Length: 358
Image 1 (cartoon, rainbow, N blue to C red):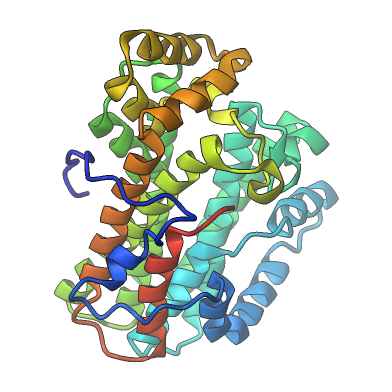
Image 2 (image 1 turned 180 degrees about the horizontal axis):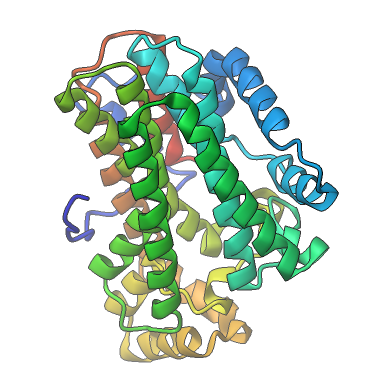
């Protein structure tokens, strides 16, 4: 894992002013030309592959225990872009790998991700995800935890199909690091003294690690050199970090109808995310104290004031700038990849990430 570094960067324009992704397109790196199409356009490149992944998922969810299938299918069918398996498929295409194992391992990373969502929502006592009730809200905490365990164990069964020890090492390490990240986040709940380095450690473990594993797996399947494998892993880690920073921004700048989750959930759960860290650093003593008290108490009655402070202190813009730096790092990591449509798609994903609203 790369060492944490200071995320204080010049603020980029907010959405609605000249696009923050313009800063990426203005760089010397080969970023695709401006494109107003949604991320779905990039994912069209692998639409056929995703159909095959869905077939694998449906087959491997087949079990004699109805509740396992019911809960699993409920959360997997909840929507979303399936970004982690998509990254594995896009990177496989960029490196010229067309073997069947890309479908199996794409399903594996989706199962691992789904398991973490089930466990996350229980720990966080979440009630809404992607615009509908969470699995724990619909089926109860015991079912969610146990089905999450089933998905983890099924994922490890499927890993064996690759018959590749390196694949096992990558996924075993990723699963372990993700669990560590979950525990770190739990330990940090309601801790308003959390700094950028500690925040970055959590999101690189909890969120970015599976992005990193997805792109690294594609390189392993393609038989890439160690240097290319590391470049692919760096892309995944940087993209995953940017993804989570933007997710944390949307908790204070998003619309529940678009994000599919309750605005202010992070504050209610006592999560000290980057927008709040920046707000406390750059606000007046009174503003900093109000945000600190809200974090420590998980007090959403002050949510309106907290959002106002986050905006007045420039914390949203600064957080988006931090995400932009990570997106740029992802783009830079791909500079030596072959020039093809899939590689261009990976570049476009990094540029479009800054415009995500859900």
